[in-house]
Image 1 (cartoon, rainbow, N blue to C red):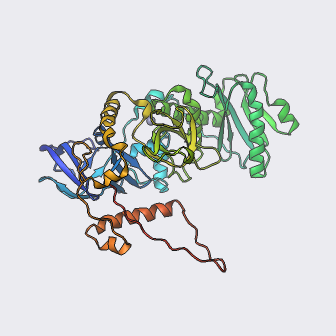
Image 2: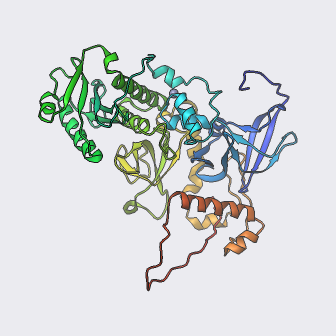
Image 3: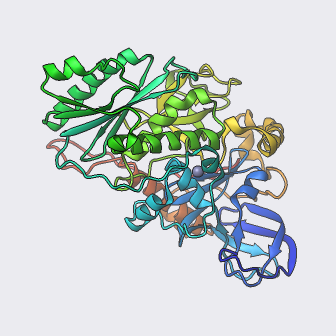
Length: 485
Ligand SMILES: [Zn+2]
């Protein structure tokens, strides 16, 4: 148990979870532990059984072979599955919780320090996770440099009055775009950080000019001082003449004395550690370091105060909607890709396409879009061992019905989704809202309606405005459809 006590297991058996949408989830070798108050279901074991779990900010959706299985909502630090009934003599209460949610947020936040996560929980920026029992993260132990910073540094009192810059060298691992260096610019006052990737060191000056133009224009302030680390990165300081021309004092710190450029050193260390942890934990090829450090910087600029609900676990599997011109009538409507970061200056995500079969878009291209579903517990680049086994068995079972025309699905009375899954015979779809909420399935329709409304509100689908003179409104109605996959 969490507090390292142990408690007796008095039995083992099969448990059927009857979910509210009619599917039954069969769990084998379930331990009967009478002193645990909650019925717990492990995410990783569900994963081994081929169940995919999609995490939204406060909601989870379970699917198998792309068919909907069930869902649940965030509740007291865990996810509560919407369970209609638990079929087992020993089950103590009618609820089942999903554990491991903490890991998802930990991944979304780029393996950030737990103290940050605690702070964000306190500020209600992320759900109330219980972080107390969280053990060590293997990827972090493997990838992070152990170095303690204890010196606190005084801050400047205004934006842009001091900018720290540092140049990182990864010349042995070129990115896909041929970049070998990165440069950081950190505002001492706000700690807002920008990272740029460079092909060679000579580009540093141009990038600084770009940065300067942007921040000065946006903030209507001027950069006063630039602090760089002399000797190591900037042998012949590329900023000297430029800074002189623009009245910027270019301070240099003595070589190999990182303590005199503490802010930049610390921030660079954090970014580098996050980049490494993200690469190690996702199994991504090292030439994606550029995307990783840009994502780490994106996260760093948002924690702990800004909204993070849209963050996703780096390098996780995403099913991206095929863009309109390439869309087909039959077959898959999405393709598999890997989530690699956040687009600059827009609210879209970046994806690297990983799967070529049945895909109208070339593998290894990068696309930016909003239309994707994320599977934050699956990492395409980590496909070895257990995940590989799961993948192959899944592919076999998916073939028979994935490409069938829709009509035959409607006629089907029972779809075999693999061991333990059954769908039930269903009635006609309701024609109106009234019919839906008075039908025997009313609780399910109610839930579907609530969830639809919730997503419409969440996406800010409309804005309320006054009707312009002479204009007429068009009505709208609910359309109810059962999913028969
Ligand atoms: Zn970690």
